[in-house]
Length: 74
Image 1 (tube, rainbow, N blue to C red):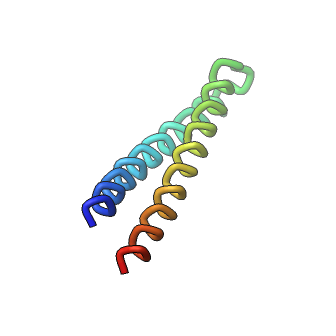
Image 2 (spheres, helix red, strand yellow):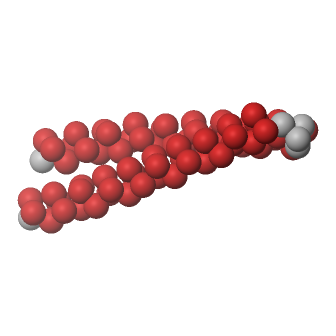
């Protein structure tokens, strides 16, 4: 049970990180719309999108790990 609680806390932190990345991505897209020819801003948007996808994948993996541990715990 302790391991499940630890993973759930980790999951909560990752969700907060994903929300923050999503917000920053939205801000970067707005700035890019104002300056559409800026390759620096376009690269930043792409990096944020990749970070968000990686974090989302980590959250999904934690969901699976938590479900497995719960099923094993009975």
